[in-house]
Image 1 (cartoon, one colour):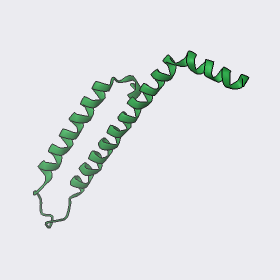
Image 2 (cartoon, one colour; image 1 turned 90 degrees about the horizontal axis):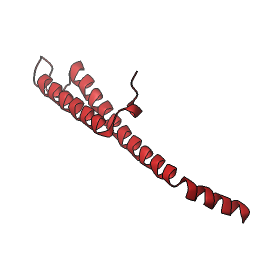
Image 3 (cartoon, helix red, strand yellow; image 1 turned 60 degrees about the horizontal axis):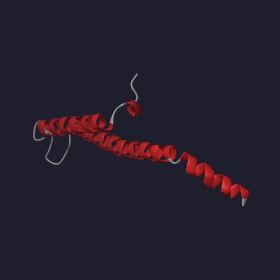
Length: 92
């Protein structure tokens, strides 16, 4: 099974964009149809809105993941300097 951490940042952004567009299109397609009183939402509309919220949360998660990857790379590349500073602190 493919994990989110294994997918590239551009691919994640594209997946999120396509999911949002599909969700928006589905929501538009269900609006104004049916016998529901005006102002009330159908179960389908509620489900699509929940899906769109989850897609938005995944978008925020992907931003957090990108930040974590960036921090990991910075820490990894600065490892020697960090180890030297830690050693100096322990000596002092």
